Image (cartoon, one colour):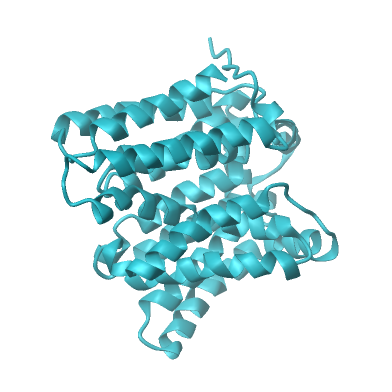
Amino acid sequence: MAAYWALFSLFASGALFKHGGEGGRRFGILLIVAMGLLALFVGLRWEIGPDWTTYRALFRYLHDGSLREAAGQSDPGFRILVLLLQSQNAPFWLLNLICACVFSFGLARFCMELPNPWLAVLVAVPYLVIVIAMSALRQATAIGFVFLALRGMGAKPLWKTIFWVLIASLFHASAFIVAVLIALSYTRNRLQAAALLIAAAIPAYYVLFGTFDLYLKRYGAHRIDSGGVAFRVAMNAIPAIILLVRGSRAFAPGGEEAFWRNLSLLSLALIPAMLYVKSTTAVDRLSLYAVPLQILVLSAIPRQFSTSPATRIYPVMAIVVYCALTLMIYFALGTHARYYLPYEMADIW
């Protein structure tokens, strides 16, 4: 467990030293180095996570497939990546490393635009980094592309944002929910929203139909539950309430207020959804795309509630303690916590 706390301490230290906004270029370079270490930490793990056996078997199973077959199956982007690696006789750890680099790069680009990037990354460490990125390869990679879509989306053409979301959907079709939120947030009326959704849905239908069909059968016909889903939904609901109460303009850059407001409403809608949806795992999957809301709001709280750099350290410390408690609770009570211990690194030499 010491390895995980070392990773946590790295970003916690940066968050505490960067709380006043000082540091400039030097802290930016250090953050890039730290994110590189995070990518290696996640990507070079060995036999870590509850999905390790499944992905190892899938990596071997796809050895004899073709690119055309992969393109017509579920999560085609991931399958094509595996086939390309298999064609070069690449080891399994390289697949993990590539997915970790996509995730870490997207997370870094998103967090670097926030007031305290170190604190922003720290918010992601206990659950999104350690639990998701170190096990769920496909969805972690999809989230990495979603981060690229959300980075500065109010200042770039809409098609670039949609493009990154569609790429994310090739690795996990559930990411398409982000495209729906963007369509509802960036259009002036329902007609424009419908046109944008249709334009995005047509290619998504032909590429992702097999995946959606699989998910409907898996989560619609059978009851599949995820332990701790209520806790994770609550983790999104708290920053959602803060944003709605304070106003999205206080946290989001110009032009992005509607999106973050709609994402907050979705986060709150997942609370009653847990009672009516047959499979809580489906709710759990969707809640992952609201984690950027946690990062956005919690990393901005010190500046929202403290105008003085001297006193800003106190809310930063409170968030660090909150993140530490989250990590402690997961390792103490998490259903799959045992799959992460001890941390082992791949032998790449």
